[in-house]
Amino acid sequence: MQLDATLRTTAPPAQVLGYVADLADYPQWISLVHSATAVPAAAVPTWDVELRAKVGPFARSKRLRMVRTAHDTTNPARIVFERRELDGREHAAWRLEVTVNTTAPGVTELVMQLRYDGRFFVSVVEAILQQNIDAGRSKLAALLEG
Image (cartoon, rainbow, N blue to C red; front, side):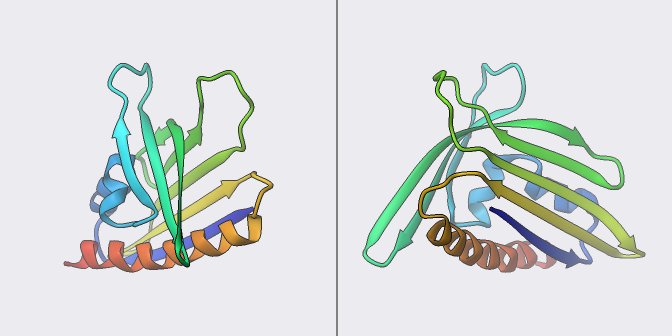
C-alpha cells in the first residue's frame, strides 16, 4: 500500500523542513504518531515511534524503530525514514519519503509518500492512515501559516 499526500504553502522550505526532518516533531501535527523518541546511542538518526489509532471503541498501537536513511536538504530536499528493527525477525516494511521543493516564487510544496507492505487488515489500515494524513495536513498547514 502506498499513500501520497501533498501540501502547498507560502512558508519557506526551511520552515517546512523544520517540521518534517525530525520524527520527534510529528506528534505535534499528526495524531497517528503518538510518540517519537530519538535513540541517542544510534549511529544514524533513529527514533522509537508509537503509532496509535482509534477504530470505533477499539484503540490499537504499533511500535516501530525508524531510521533516517536519506537526508538531503538542497532544493528539492529529500528525506527518507525506514523501519529497521533489531530483533532479527522479518517485519512489514514502513517507508516514508518526504520531498520539499520550491515550485514557484513564494510557494513551497511538501510531498509525503508512505509505503506499508503489511498484509493484515490493509483496507482498514489504509482508511485509518488516510484519515490521519488528511487531518495532519490541515494541522501542519495551520502551524506553517500561523
